[in-house]
Each structure stands twice: as structure tokens, then as C-alpha cells.
Image (cartoon, rainbow, N blue to C red; front, side):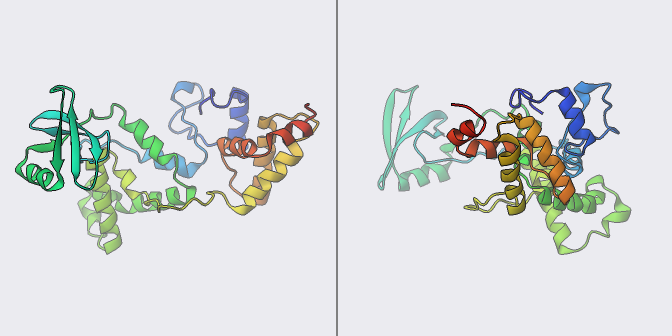
Length: 275
């Protein structure tokens, strides 16, 4: 957890959240005596997912695409050129090295591309693949983590090369996920990412249920937007307790802070006794 994003949360608060089930720590991996090695997760399902996030030992496939959008770069005759204009007729490319611009019709561009004179401009490979993978997983729902973990366990014999159990992996669905796992290994270094469901474009619905959203609103109104001047941390603690009583999985502290921020700031100041 990043303390800089949540300045009101201290070590004691973290321990309390772990004790009450608001956060999860796998003590089989690291002990509290070694805090630098302890990884904290929202729940056990996500902790299991990150345990499956193992970097591949196979070489990562470099995939470089050529974009024709303004500002994108490509190699033309081994020199770097930037797209500075695009219209119905073709492209205008600029070279800093040659200090000149050239016009290419789309027909001419295709001709040079097929002949191998135009190539993708290779970017530097990422330095921290695990950080990039963590960023991808940060937007995955608990439901998707659970499904991916179940799939991982089914295809694990194939991944480990267990010849005695590979024969059990014969149905089409498992073969599909094995293929996705291997593709993710080649493309980004972590096969587990291939088991994540693809996001559907245009789906901007809230990730939390209406019941959780209503409960957050109630907690904010009764435990934060009051003259008692309770802190956001205290209010979040009440939310965790309420969720556990109702058998609900509590949202993250970051989600709770976002919900507070989205409410009427002027109204909150008045309710808390401000001017």
C-alpha cells in the first residue's frame, strides 16, 4: 500500500485492517518481522493471483507495429521519420536528421513497406515487466481473479510439463487457455496475464454493486459528513465492519476516497461545521 496516497493511514491501521479481514497477508510467504518482504492484498483471491505471476524464462517476442497517426515514427531506409500530416491523399513525413519533409501516397507507402524499406521504429523494452503486469492486474475484478485462478490450476500440469497429467487436459476450453497463456508469455513475459478476460469497449458501468454503492453513501453521510468530524479512515473502518456484517466484500480504500471526492464538496464542508 502506498502511504503517500493515503496519508491518514498508519502501520497500526494496516494491522487492524488485516486483523478484521479488510486486507490480506499470506504469512506463509513472509512474516511481519520482515516488513519489507510482506505484500499486502485486498483479499486472498488477489494474493493467489499474484503468486501465479511468474516471469517466463523464454525469450519475449518483440512486436512492433507501424502507426500512421500524427506524431508516430517509422524507419524509412534505416532513418527515423515522423508523421507530421495525414490526409486522404497520403502522408507527410519529417526527418530531423535530414532536415526535410517528403510526401508519400498510400500506394507508395504500401510499395515501400512490402519491399522492406519501411520498418517499425523499435522502442526501448520496458525495464520493469512485473510493475507493468501489476498495473494491468490492478483493474481486474475479484470475480475475474477467481476465474483466472481456477483456469491456472487446471492448466498447471501442462505448464509444469507433467506428462502424466497432460492427457487430462483435452477439452477445447483448456486448450484455448493454454494457447492464451503461451502467447502472453511470448508477448509480455507473464503467461498468467493471458488468462485475464478482455475488457469490452464502451463498458463504463460502475465496478461495484448497487448495494455496496448505497452502503458507502450511507456511511459517508452518517460517519463522515457530520459535526463529529470523524476522519475518512474512521469512516472506512465503519464501512468494512458493515460489509462484513452483511456478507459483502468491502471496496478498496481508494474507491471509498473517490466516492467521497465525487460528492458535493460545499455540502460536505457545511455538514462538518465548516464555513
